[in-house]
Image (tube, rainbow, N blue to C red; front, side, top):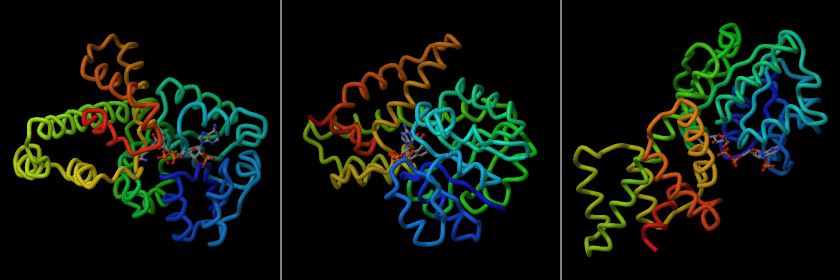
Length: 285
Ligand SMILES: NC(=O)c1ccc[n+]([C@@H]2O[C@H](COP(=O)([O-])OP(=O)(O)OC[C@H]3O[C@@H](n4cnc5c(N)ncnc54)[C@H](OP(=O)(O)O)[C@@H]3O)[C@@H](O)[C@H]2O)c1
């Protein structure tokens, strides 16, 4: 089985590495070629365009920033839609707007290929360790074809039904995650400002109902002034935008989401490339 992987950023590089190590024949494409170097050194073949990648691959996997990036590698000149054909499978792991996912499914269907939207839960380290959670929706047959590959990059892969159900779940996950982590970090900055030791407060909160492995991972880094990017601030701002758009479409009352989106908007210029936990710095200024 030949796998083509488009997008070798924080998440994609870990995922593509695990597939290569598991013995799949890998074709890779990344806008910035240097990021493919390690994979190329280990035997992956670099394609000069997404079109070439789709010619050579049975499964076309993509893990890109956003809707704009996905359109660039699929619809632009030399995009993979130009060479997509019957029987091939396109899997989009990127977090995108659910309505775009519906559009992409139609473009893939026109080529008689199969489509899965498959956003993931888990960040840089689970991507490197092959321990992501994959949420898939779309062609059931495609999900079955991908089972073996998904096993190499995830601890769990779930089939949820029709597009855009997986994108909806991902939007809700990131809404809940961003709003709750932001509130937690606001609390720590608040503690510091009223003269409490934030580390002492964290240890107490973490021994009670707020104990949670992901909060613990993020907050310990914040307390060590470590904002190395695992999930970028700008990507979380992007996901808050998708969540707000879906909330508007369904006329949902989401005031916490709206408030947290404003906080991320405020910090975007300064913290775009840092980890999303840099939202703490906005409260600590
Ligand atoms: N990091 C996480 O914790 C995490 C967790 C779950 C889901 N996600 C989602 O996974 C996706 C990837 O995240 P990431 O953290 O891996 O981001 P990243 O490190 O910023 O990587 C983004 C990738 O998209 C490519 N790209 C961006 N704009 C492009 C364009 N216009 N044309 C072609 N390629 C383009 C980049 O290419 P270049 O290398 O050339 O810039 C890079 O390969 C996002 O949708 C994110 O929301 C991330």
